[in-house]
Image 1: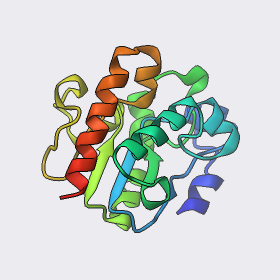
Image 2: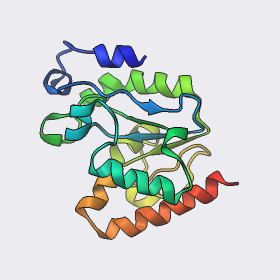
Image 3: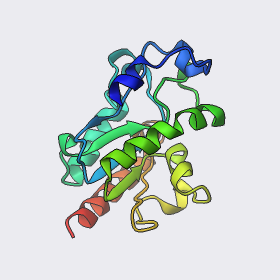
Length: 174
């Protein structure tokens, strides 16, 4: 599956045509927890790895706060190619990549899925609002968090993210 994602091109969707490279998920393929972000950013596009920029560093801090080691989880994105200028992914672009995400989750079979941000959450719980459900367990398998990048633009969310990470750690230690 990784090879398929890396080789993906020529589909006509703008992110796939303009990105430097596609970004497959990474981590433990037998992970109990899968973190799903929205789309790669500039650093991810350059390196071909998810969550390696500033948001990735904050995600690493959140994982540590939850008592989780990055290598023990799976980290991926809804869209596997960087939208131009880091714009939000468009609905058709999300739909284009959705079968890949669904196959990823099917192969890994995690006990818990952690959508990071509203675009990821929308796939798993279309009616849910990230501002209302972050840091809570939904449908026995979803534990949404704000996207780490949101805390970089809104410092008041940082404390909330760390509080939610501690709640995730408590849930995982049950």
